[in-house]
Length: 148
Ligand code: CA
Ligand code: CA
Image (cartoon, rainbow, N blue to C red; front, side, top):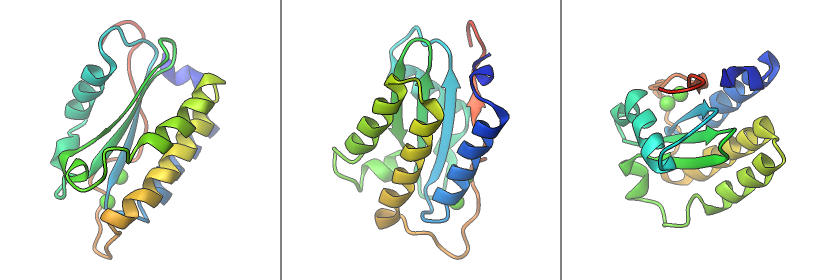
C-alpha cells in the first residue's frame, strides 16, 4: 500500500500542513498518493479529482496534488475557479520545488513545502474568510497497490 511509504508522523505532518494552508485561503487542498500510474498522469489526476468530489467547492477553488511514488509521476490540478484567475505559470515554482524533493524520495518534505506555497499563493486570489467552512477533508487519500 502507498500508505506504508509514510509513517504516521509524516501523514500527520501533511494533514497539519493542509489545515494550516487553508487558514490562509478559501481554496481547498487535497493530496492523493498512488504507487503506480499506468495512464497519462493528468487523466489519472482528473479521475481522482472527480472521485474525491473536488468539483463541489462553492468557488471552484480546490487543488489536488497527485503523486505516484513508484512510477515517478506527479501533477498539480486546480479547479476552474483557480485557473480562470491565475497566470498560466502559477504552479511552476511550486511544482519545481516539489519535484526537487521527490527526486530525492523526500515525499513528505516535498508535499509539505508545496502545500505551504499553495496556501501562500492562493491567498492573493482566494483570501480566507471568517465564515470559511472546510469543504473538503484535509486527510491524504491513498490508492490501492495494483489497480484502482
Ligand atoms: Ca475552506
Ligand atoms: Ca480542507
